[in-house]
Image 1: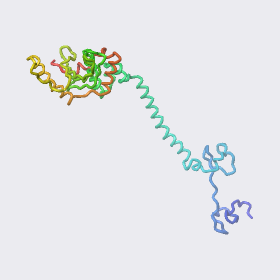
Image 2: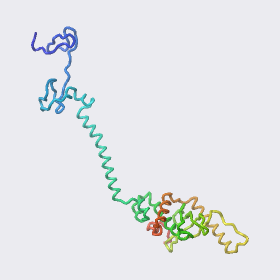
Image 3: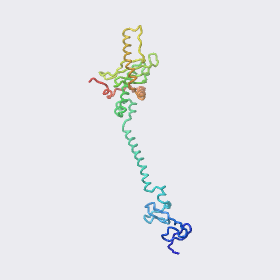
Image 4: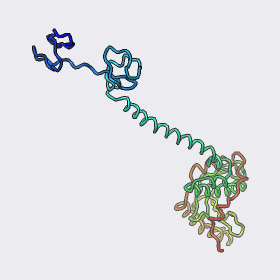
Amino acid sequence: MNDEIREFCPKCSNPLEDGQDFCPKCGTKKAVPEMITCRECGAVLQKDQGFCPKCGHRASPAADVPAAAATGGIGTGNVKKIVKFVLVPVFAVLAVALIIFTVSGLFPNTEKLLAAGKYEQAYNAAPPSDKDRILMENIAATVSSKSANSLKDRSSFELREAWFGDDCSRVVLEVGGKNAYGGIVTNYWYYTYDEDKEEFSLFTTYTSLEEEKENSWDDDDTKLEKLLKNIFLITVKNIIRDGEKLPKSSVKNINSLFERDLLEDVGLIRAVYLRMPSDS
């Protein structure tokens, strides 16, 4: 028997010579040795080799399986690509979050400024989409302070709603407060912008949105006053129906400023004067 023969048929154990891929006795294909690769450099190893002859890396137990099988069918290079593909977007998101967190700390919070009654700073810091809301809240806060000071019991003031005309030069407040008898009543306060004084002045008030009826005992002055109030009541009702309504959050903030004695310190901001119509 030839001593050089090292392979045998896996079925009948018949010795196989070099170049014989099939057993000449039973026709069975000879066994193909499993390829083992070094996990460090990728060199092909013999099954009984404990160290890589190319780089000297120790053959680990995992070297008994193909490199692709050791990673579930994914080569080592592909694993690195997948890890990079997953981690890079994660780091990018974290970086953006850090930038947003840092930048937000550098600029003042608009809502906190409004809560403190600092309307000028809030208006300047706010994005364009919020500027009109802040401008209207500033006007409503200013005239609310006037209304509160006109009540019999100033401490009973409560702003319920506010509406603005097209150019914000007219504003209607719905205010709750105690009357002379201690009962809570609702009044509508109609303010208009006075260009000469550069401030909002009270035009008239209404206890309801119903027209006042003439009585037989009314004198001429009383009849004229009721007639004029009924005429302007139409304007007030149109503003309430078609005007810009102050958001609930702004109403809540104005009442909070009043409760904390900050409302009287509020004045019209520069943007209001620039917004108001002028003859010049």
